[in-house]
Image (cartoon, rainbow, N blue to C red; front, side):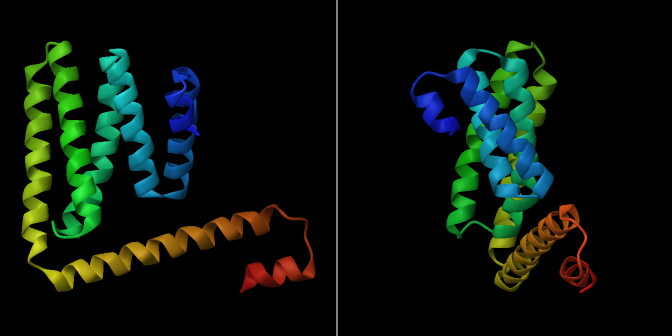
Length: 168
């Protein structure tokens, strides 16, 4: 929804939609969706020249990249997309730091980007570790889905069926 709103020039509504999406993604531990929403917010705030907010959301998105990209290596399609996003976010972070006259933050953003890329290069040669990481990430998604289902069941009125499902 945020992309459509942005395309038609409804930037405030787009920003609100992306903030809501980011909140939901964070609450449900959907890293990829959170990365996407935070990246879009960083880019939009950068487009508006609001470098303070651009930096905040670029950092949030970079945190998500840093948590997952090195585990994927360089050869996966996901990691290539994340590498591109990382470069875009680094550019936003550096621009925000320059606008704030904070060269230390600019250097920190560049260093962080380099560290993520180095970790991805190291992981690229470890195919077994990549497979294990993907398996863990898939299991994390399953746990999140189960937790959502438990919350949904807990919100329902008490019944034998509900109680039986919650016990199992």
